[in-house]
Image (cartoon, rainbow, N blue to C red; front, side, top):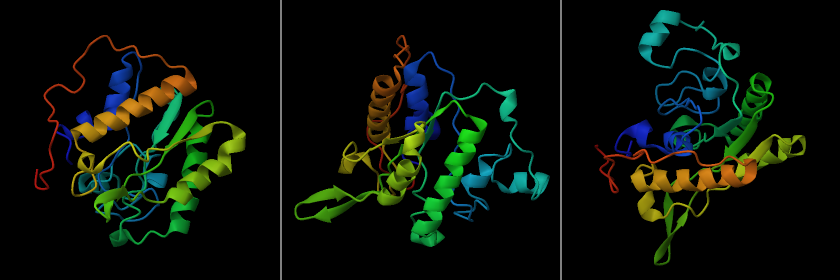
Length: 225
């Protein structure tokens, strides 16, 4: 919402493009929850929607009804790394997803990811959720901290699930009024995740100078943009 080119200047795209010599894809629906619930116009959550070919819009619903075409994972290159950042919409009181529902759905989603990508390393990202005032400064609020770390703990012994703690990367002016990162916020998240992947999994940076963030703004917090 507050990135100049939306998804194309978001941290997900910047991570893939920043590595340069990797193939990557992004699965995202504005306003969608991880838990299988109706959130901000998305009739289903990612625990269901991630397995489907069509998206969540009205036209797709009219075309496919309640039986959309399943995504053919076998027809595509399997993932080596899966990075998951989900839960901000679940955490909104308008969507009434409980912490227990979120946790159990996250456990189920990771199981599904591992089923279709058995060799993939799965990275769970902690969430930023704006800032609260404290004295003469601010502190990062976060969301579902215990639940996300609990999912990591649930799978930790199996060796393919990892935890990326984003706490402290974003400062107050890196997050816009409606909890979406600014261009700078996305760049900071991407830079830290790239270094995490390089150090933990041995991936080296292969970009040779493309303007990944060409024409983006370094400040954009207009809520009606």
